[in-house]
Image (tube, rainbow, N blue to C red):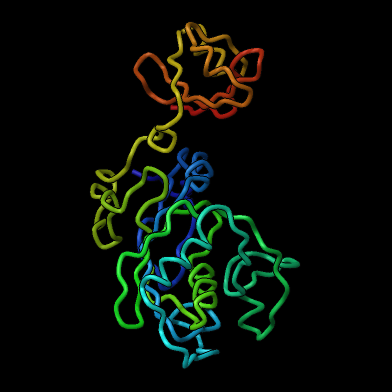
Length: 270
């Protein structure tokens, strides 16, 4: 099914202790992964109050323990409000971000800590699902680039007790849900893998579609701009992106409205 040398990529890794959705692209699908990684992500995280670790999760070294009384559920709920919406977040030292050509986690493992600039991220949903003893379970929906470990650590400091992640499950990336996923153990043979593969169009299924005539199809194959027939004027905004499909509704390219027509910026060949 896949020839030797076929490209394989992913739309964002998971922390070593985490589980959940990891979107893989094979062959031409690797050219769509950037659009998947840009999507919002949804997580379920279990955090314990009272301790902080250097990795901000249970795999790290405990660097701080608190004897402060645990907050009441009402206080936790109230503090969550401080982290909803657009916030600035400092990436953790144990992360894959680079500083002077080195991954931060490489510096951290060498015992070095460096200054990191805060990054704006968006927390769309932050919901307390369960609070029992020193353990709380949260549902988080957030923008690309959000570190759940940092969110938990910041929340713990805001509560005055400290906190660290015990478990983390990525429930979704955009339209890719955990219910669609399978484990590596489920992929025993090439036929098992083939039955799990989705079409290219799934990665951009929320984009408006333009069905190409035979004439405009040739323009797209040649990488030239074209004027689509019957395009809704409300979709003609500068930079608006479209799925381009042939008469059989197969994805053949991606286009962007430029004012002079639709310009194909990705073309997929059979």
